[in-house]
Image (cartoon, rainbow, N blue to C red; front, side, top):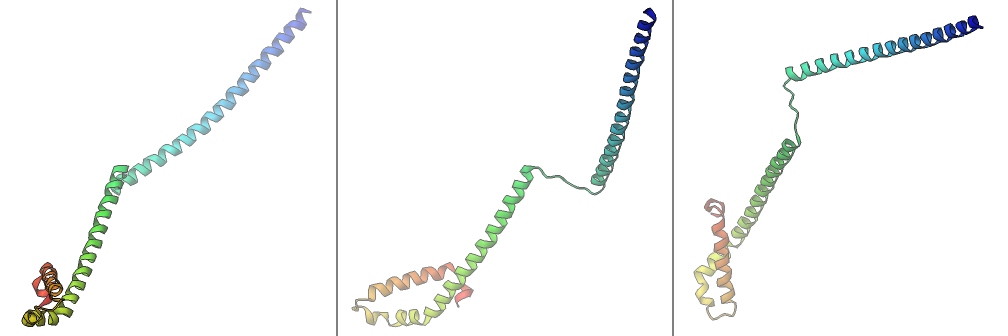
Length: 142
């Protein structure tokens, strides 16, 4: 009976030792795979870092992106404003050139209309015409 118990103890001991050896071997294989993957990752990181360093690549943070967008907005607004100003000036200039003969006639013979009911309206019109004319550069309407 003692011999049987000794055999059972030896079998259990060898089974446990074999199990631990097998688990240890599996762990070593997994660690080896992890080391290879980590080595590949490290090499990739180093080559990417080398590429970034050699090509002067800048990474933008959120503040830089907001600043660029704001500068673009200002530039677009300025362009739109200039287009609008040029458009308004060209239309005012066209109006001044179209009405110039009538205004000159009224300035020359306006006193003849002094008693006419539309005389105050025409004088206000001439005053506004001159104010618009003053907004434009002199060379535009001559």
